[in-house]
Length: 252
Ligand code: ADP
Ligand code: MG
Ligand code: MG
Image (cartoon, rainbow, N blue to C red; front, side, top):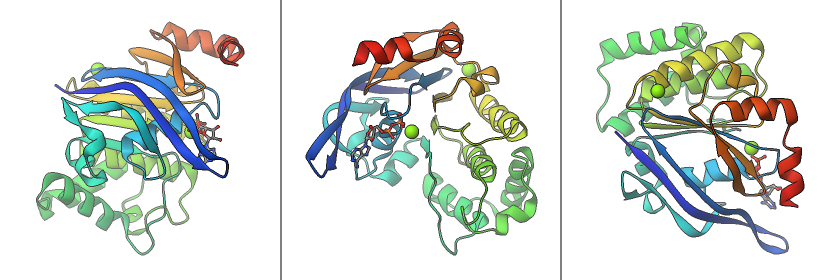
């Protein structure tokens, strides 16, 4: 059982004109067994929230707190966050030149578990995971994110999610740029993960499309750096029908 607690989080970025506040007091609690969807227009600060929780150095946390089971996440290094059980799939995953998918996954798994996975079962696990993500076993010999299509990046994220087995998964724009087949595979992967009552998911998305395949327990409308409204799955249907207009109008 885990709880990720975000309290009154304020985050700024440095711009040419000085610091600019992007997150303006985000409060959100996510507990095991729950899937939360954060939905909002472009530029509302959704990725900033994900990056801030991930510990990206560009984002300056000016006030507020993030804790995982009471532990101060903001005081942890990026590695410590992963070891604590947090998985943060980024909207624009970086290339890791010269590092194969196989080595990357093994290194990440070793870092998180504190010991290397058993070689015999590991290869089997990796191949099974890649297959479930709709990736050929030869994919493990490719360099991480080098020349990956949008779909391959997201499938690779899902493979990481399964193998690294975190407590809390934060997925940013997991659906962007996916064709329908990839969207199904990725949604199935998230659903398999979320089936386990020990797991929590924060799914960040601009589009309602993925929510036809993943049913969130809670939906939050994110506008201008804060949560404008929270509700159940029906709120996603309402957004699909009416868009963000009413919230954006209110926020300006
Ligand atoms: P979303 O993921 O919801 O589309 P982002 O978190 O990517 O939103 O961006 C939120 C806001 O922060 C945007 O208005 C963006 O222009 C602004 N922003 C992010 N980084 C910088 C920066 N380095 N300088 C100025 N503005 C920035
Ligand atoms: Mg569940
Ligand atoms: Mg974004």
